[in-house]
Length: 155
Picture 1 (spheres, one colour):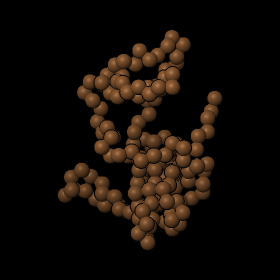
Picture 2 (cartoon, helix red, strand yellow):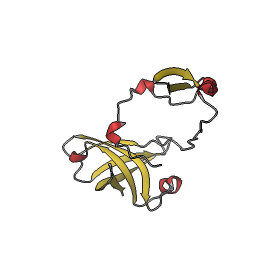
Picture 3 (tube, helix red, strand yellow):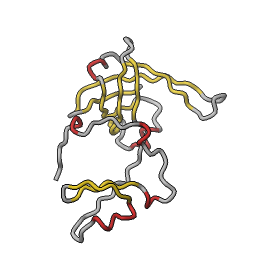
C-alpha cells in the first residue's frame, strides 16, 4: 500500500541541540518514541521487544544520511533553503551522483521557492586541509515542480 502524505503535514523545525550527530557508544540506549494504545511512551531501543506483539512486522531502513540541506541567498539577499531528496540525473544512484563532475539534477524540497527564480551560484571548498583546498563554483537552477518537490539542476 502506497500512502501519499503532503510534505506540509510532516515539516517541522527541529532544534539543533536535539539532533544526534554521532551514535551512542551503546546503541541499545538510543531513544525510542513509542505510540501504542493512543499513548506516547519515551523509552529506549533496549526495551523494543516489550512493545512488539507476535504479529507485528519490523521494517528496517538501511538508508544513508547525507548532508542534504543547502542554504543560499538569491541576488536580493533572500534566504532559500534546498533539501535534496533523491538524485534524478544522470543516475538515481547516490554514490555515483556524488562522484559526478558535470551537471546533476535532484528532486528537492525548497523553502521560499517563490523567491528562487534566477539561478543561484555558490562556492564550495573542497579538501579538509585549508592550505591544499580548492574552491569550485556551483550554479543551482530551479526547474519544474515534481509532486510536492522541484527538480533542481546543479552545474
